[in-house]
Image 1 (spheres, rainbow, N blue to C red):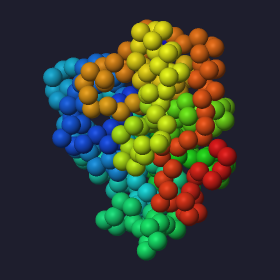
Image 2: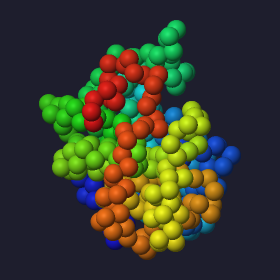
Image 3: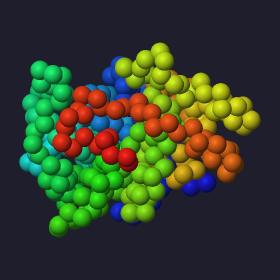
Length: 316
């Protein structure tokens, strides 16, 4: 089974990575060390997670202990919405590199297609609680991203949370220099993203699945929300293979050739989440799991529904 996905840049991106959204600063360095020790070579982070210095700490501890070399790691970060002005992109990337203490990123993503008013607030809100736009359009932001590749600060660039129409606008941009290498989107059996994945892959754009376990620790979870890890149908497939529900949910993405980044700060779970290359779901089971789709989003970004570039009003 392939353990990596070939990007349109020619680079191999490990198909399984460690997610770090909601990993508290005091715990994330240990999580990164546990992941690298367990065999992970892909770490996914972002400026907005506010824990990149600690992620870097974990990475450097492993490099210094000769467990891994920098060039064996695939480090990902994301440009936050308050840095969408073309001239602000480099400064944002340099801040992330300084926090991680790295010379380059393997992949840098535009975190959302929406620009927010720049300043100290990560989520600048108006009096009605809606995010305030900066008036930029992501095609300008993309030119700033392309400059990072030319400057050698990043090896590849991509997008996150873009819908099909937004990707088309980008691919049809006059003077486009670099195509996005991946589109990182929420993806799990309750939001299986079949149409978007099929479109992206047809355009040579890989897909990365975030919240593949349904993000049970999201801050806005309600008791009545569906729980993927507790879903009896997933559990029964897991029992058949003597695996955990999480391992089945991760394996499901791998078999679709979708890069997947489960988040955990528990060393035992981090290790378990990587033990997914020794079993295979049948075609029937894959179909069954695809049938659980209910277009349920963990991360609807409800504060931005009025933003001109809000991605989730489209069908996909």
